[in-house]
Structure formats: structure tokens, C-alpha cells
Length: 170
Image (cartoon, rainbow, N blue to C red):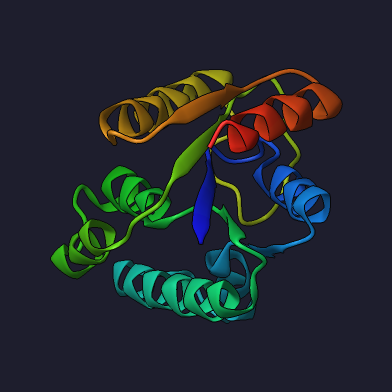
């Protein structure tokens, strides 16, 4: 089973690309658990909620991995929760860091900020300089991961083709 992670700042087409890749490879993709969690939360989220989101993401990922067709596409991984926690709270729960260390993936697809920002009540960093800042953080993560990764840029079709080439090279 190969696990592909689509990672990047908010509103950079991660879910769209994940869905397209899953359709192309006739497999499953794991949506970002945090989105559904936050939509059902009837209050502002707190740092402890990030641990619940991390746990939910892994449970969802593990359930999908059993049913996937030799390839699993993950719309984000726990690195996103780590970055989110550090940006908002200044640190990250050590339990989340342990979960990150325990997971194995095979490829990162890093989405660039050249997709137009789509406003959404769950998104927090619309300014171009914020988007660039977070892109650099994710770029550092994938570069230091020791895993293969691809920089995903351009229009939706170009992004999909670049991602397919990267996945095929596995």
C-alpha cells in the first residue's frame, strides 16, 4: 500500500486534487477530518480539539487503507495540525508529535498558492503574505521529510498531470 499526502496551505486545491487522483487511480481518498469536526463543533475550537482532530484523521485514514486499491490518497496529514497548532498556540501537543513520528507515507504533493483564495468560515489566513509564509513552512517539512515530493502548481489540469507523474514515478 502506497500512501500519498497532499499537503499545503489553506485554499490551495488539496481536496480537489485528492479527489481527482483517487478517481484517476480508482482508489479511495481520505478527506481532511478537521473540516467535518469543526463544522460540527458548536463553539470556537481550542488547542485540545487539535488532538481529537489528529486522532480522527488517523482513524479515518486507517479505515480507508483497508479498502483502498494499493494506493491511498490523504488530503493532508498530521503535519498540518502541527503547523496549525504552532501558528495559533505557539506549540504542539507531544501526543500529536508522537503520532506524526509513528506514521509512514510514500510521497508528498505540495500544493502552491497560485490557486485563488476561496473564502470559507473555517479558513484563517487569506492574506498573500500569510499564504506564502505557510507555503514555506510546508515546503520545509516536505524537503526535510526524506520522502519524495512534488511541487504542484498551475491550473487544475496541470496540477493533476504533475501529481499523476509524481505518483507514477513511485
